[in-house]
Amino acid sequence: MEIIYTRNSQDVAKAVAQELSWTASPANVRCFNNREICVSLEKSFRNCLVLTSTTNHDEWVELFLLLDALRNAKKIILCLTYMGYSRQDRQLENESFGADLWMRLLETMNISHCLILDNHCEPMLRIPTHHMSARKIFEMDIRSKYKSDQIAVVSPDLGGVYRADLLAKSLGCGFAICNKTKNVFGELKKMYKLGDVAGKICLLLDDMVDSGATLCRAAEILMESGAAGVVAYCTHGVLSAGSWKKLEKSALTEIVLTDSIAHQPPLTGKFRKLSITSLIAETIRCIL
Figure 1 (tube, rainbow, N blue to C red):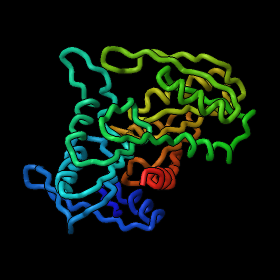
Figure 2: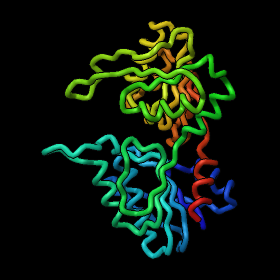
Figure 3: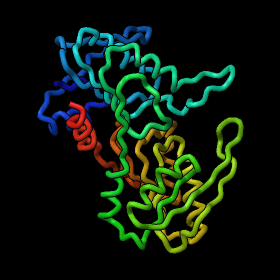
Figure 4: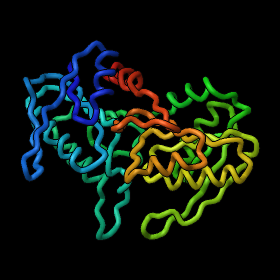
């Protein structure tokens, strides 16, 4: 097996290749003057792991063109460290169903297995799919820094309650919820807290941080409720439209992300990244 990676996944791909003692090769991507993308490979591949993240439509197109270039491969394992468009996860009348659309398109490609990390919605792919979670990575980091009686795990919304409750039970610590309501444009309208966090370091657990509005408001409410501090643990740092600046100025003490999405330049200040290399390598060993 060899690893092929897209332009946004070089560091993770090379780290996974080193862990598995495989070789890693980049997909050659060029753009025409009209921004049309073309993908080529330096050689033919028979068995390979394609590693990428798809934070926008250009990266989705790049992935599909890469998979098309691999049309003669015998076995392709696709590892999506972040699956974009997963927030379009409801089928509403006269509205696009983006999460389902991309999954149906993936099913038309020559993919043997798909690995997905902490997806925002449950991907219903009709190909063998392995769901990876960063919870154990976060748990190891938390245990190395805090005692269970010092902390409380907090879900920033009702959608993340199950995930946060699992982590709290595993750590043997307190648990709380910040419930939120949004307006018709998806903007945060109001938020309130459920659970006692007084004197605790609150660990906000979420699958992704994009605009940062939810985390910033949750941190404010928790500090107003007597929390000793607030740290965010988020798998995917989407961080669109310069939202990292907002997070830097927030009441959050620290924002811990995985390296599922690359950032240029690298994030500094309150931000810290944890590696998903071992998680991917372990999952691949299980399916081969």
